[in-house]
Every structure is written in structure tokens, then in C-alpha cells.
Image 1 (cartoon, one colour):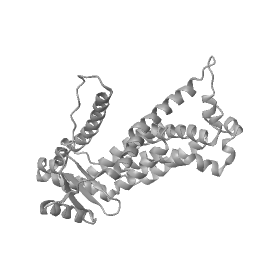
Image 2: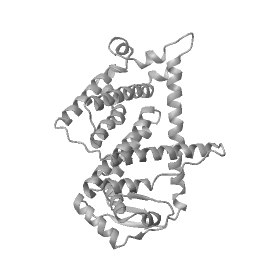
Image 3: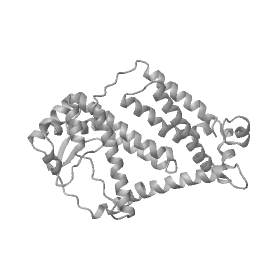
Image 4: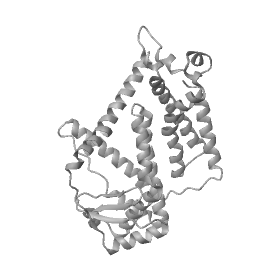
Length: 329
């Protein structure tokens, strides 16, 4: 237990505890106040990732004695060290459960996130990416109209030779939209307009920068199960927000829903029970589940109103989380 008395050990244990508390308060707030607008949900759920990342060092700066044994015994409402040190017949169930959860999540982040990034970085000098060709007048005209409505600089659009349906946005200052020949051959003009409007919405929201910062926090909190789950919710909320912006521009939710169906993946069968096949099946099913959620949301014509006291409710939630977390050590 000496490790959990160190600064790093206390940070790990308390950040997980703070994540659980923050997640509970945020989810209760979302339900009690019936927060339904995607951009508001994103703002609330961002707290689950950001606050546990910064609260421990902030609290220690304000009160260095907060990490002491006496604070844990006399002042704290919940002490992670006491629970982790709890012994039942010589067995420490909460310690082993904590190590199992954090170890499993750390392995998932290492295998699914860190190693692929390192491999791509090492291979980058040897890779020669084919440059895409500029889009034609039709696409440039659509993007120009959308950019005028959203009041952004007109991004460049490039077409790449890829057999898969692909579209994404690149850049943080000067943006460009990249799409595949395959996608261009599948989409109708209305679906194409919706797809381009969705990518333009990501530019409006600066999603590339936001996702990069959130991903950085997630990697720093590699041991935290809550951070892993909440990151995926934040990505989905960001997609919902961009869907809403797209519908506000195109007035055509049906075509956007139709365009999203193109990106559904085939789930591999289980003829050969191999780990790679099972992994691909799980990832494809998860991908399709998130897409189907967005499609259903668009088909149901979900629309939400703005609550006049939303920022008051939000600040109240932040204050409640910070005050309660101070007494969780």
C-alpha cells in the first residue's frame, strides 16, 4: 500500500474516485434537468473527463495537508486508501478489484491506441500517400454555399482513389475535406450535400482540435475505466451536434440518415473462431450500433429547445462536483 501513499498513487486512486463521483452527478443532472440538446450533453460529459484530471493537483495546491493520514481519517467523507487496505480473511478484495480494472483498461489503451499510433509514426517516412485530385465544380459549388451559411472559409475538397466509402476533415487552421471516389459514385446529390455539410460542421466546431485535446487527457488517464467509456460518449455527442448543424443547413434529415447508412460495416461471421475475427466483429457491431443511433435520431426528427437557465444549472453541477470531490481522497 506504500504506492498509494505516494503522490502518483494518490493521484491514480483519487482520480478514479473523482471520475465515478463526477459521472454519477453528471448523469443525475442530465436526467433531473432533462438536458437533451447534444451540445449541452457534450459540455456536461466533458466534465467527467476534465475535472478528475485536474482536481487532485488543484486541491493539493490549495491544501497540502489534504493528502495526510489525518485528513483522510478526520475530514474526508471517503478514503480510497482505507478501502484499498481493507482486508477480509487476509484478502484485499477492493485492492485486487482496483488493480484488475485499471490493469485491464491500461492494456486496452496500450494495444488499441498507443501501439497503433507508434506504428503509424514509425512507418510514416516510408509511406508515400497518393495525393487526391481537386473536386469538380459541383462539389466546390455545394461547399461554397454551405460555407457561406456557416460563415467559414471555404475548405478545399480532394477526391482520393479508395474503394471504401470515406470522408473526413483534415487540418486545424486551414481545413480540407477528403472523400473517396467510391463515396462519390454512391451518393445522390442530396446525400452528398448532407455529407459535406456534416464535415463543414466539424470545421465550425473545431472538432479536430477538441478531439485531440480530449484524446490527450484520455491517454494521460490510461488507467481510468470511466475515461475510456466517457471518451466514446463525447465523440458520439460531437457527431450528434454536427448532425444537428447539418440539418439546420440542409433542412433534409432524411438524406443525412440515408448517407449514414452507406458507412455501416459488414459484421464478419464466426466460421473460424480467431481472436482477430472476434475483435473485428465486436468493432464492426459497435460502429454500426452508434451509426444506427444517429440514423434513428434523424428519422424521429428529434429537435430540442434551449433552456434559459442552462448555464446556471451547469455551473451548479460543476460546483457540486468540486465541493464533493474535495472530501474524496
